[in-house]
Length: 312
Image (cartoon, rainbow, N blue to C red; front, side):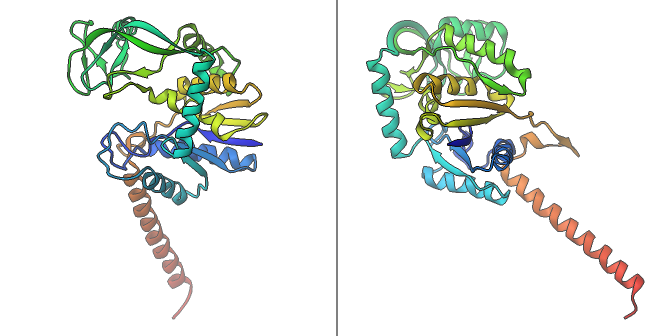
């Protein structure tokens, strides 16, 4: 069976409000085009567990309906599921048990750094690397480890030797289009497979939990069966996540044939409005006003033509 899927999309923002960036609609839009060309229905994966706040007071089903409602307004009809569903929870639990039995998940003592809110939790050497390269897409900021703080909670980092859970991915070839991303993906694969991925989170809750990215890494195995063909649609900014999902999928079920399609990055500026930062509500509000204006102009033009060429 052929499937076209997206990587997990979070339907609410960091404050639990349903007002994500318009960009969250673009990947499903491209996936819908690809799916129509292949004559199948796209599948949208929604990351509910990964939301950074629970203040919205809405169920996962409610948030999924709101997001899918936006897709419907764009004419995108898709299958969807979220990682908070009971069936997926059961699947994930069984998968972890299987990986533990196969010794693909192991325990190891590592010197870790972490903040009070638990958003930052990583090995000391990784934190030093981030600070040295001054990466922008990280919650960690500072000149060195001693002065580093979490951008979210503002706390200084603490250090401890923790017994963490490691998961080791195995290298696999990734079939990607356009091919200009091959070299970058090869570098990502090397980074993901050279060292084990720390999948446990000890400082985010009262008890040990699993990393959100690890929880949904097996979602393709959840929806696809042996010998299925899967097309994953991704943006250039989520190549790391795409590679992780593909390596994970092939490790669990090698017979699944996966292709990766990377769409262009959306960065449009028009009239001082940055579309890539526009919220979903602003986007639809703009469409509604534009349609009203277009209708008014069209109506005036039509009536002017009628009055000019016809007598009443």
